[in-house]
Amino acid sequence: MRHSLPQTPQFYVTAPQDCPYLDNQVERKLFTALYGVNSRRLNNSLSKQGFRRSQNVLYRPSCANCSACMSARISSREFKPTKSQKRILSKNLDIVRVVNPALATDAQYNLFKQYINTRHPDGGMSDMDANDFTAMIEETNVESKLIEYYAKKNGELELISFSLVDILDDGISMVYSVFNPYLKERSLGTYMIIDHNRLALEMTLKFVYLGYWVKGSSKMDYKKRFSPLEVFTKDKWICSSKVGHTKPNNVNGSKEKLGVPIYLPSDQ
Image (cartoon, rainbow, N blue to C red):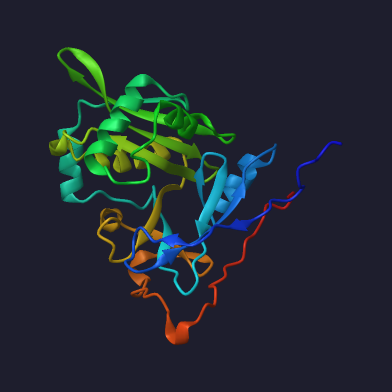
């Protein structure tokens, strides 16, 4: 007996787990699988609705009583670097950007392990081996690229940072980024976002999608430095400056879920 895949995306919700951003809260995610000829179209559509990709899965927060976690993006045309960001660009004039297919290398994995062990030793990715890393990079059926950055060391180019990205119909989605944690003077995390914005302009794309942002979260504060920052909340994109303080709503122990509609591509 042959089993055919469903014609329309099927959505599921994860079991509750500890929230990585807010103390004493739990998170749940709404997710669907990416497969078949409509994968790119679905990725384009749902990315505009606050979803993110992890390998062949698209997901977004679906938490009861809380909407603090919001997808964020910057407008490539409206973004203007601050004075400090311009200084970071000046420090890194020697960096060479290379756009490659989404294929894992030993150099990337070694830099990834260095980054994780230094910056996130207790995180969920700390136990990833080379096979897990390869799957993260290569398991994609949308248009994904690796943006690599090199600088000379002892006369030879050395990989100092890279970003796995998806090329959407309206922007660049930064799926996961890694940089050499010992080159603090270069501020590579900031540099990469600025340069991805330049790359979006070169590709005539409107946005750079940065992942999720939680107002007041120390882990997310750096994203606010890229102005104007837009966030997806209550079924629309708005300027982050218009977002009020988003406290979890635990009034009367309510378990009500804050639902947001999902709009599928017309041919789904």
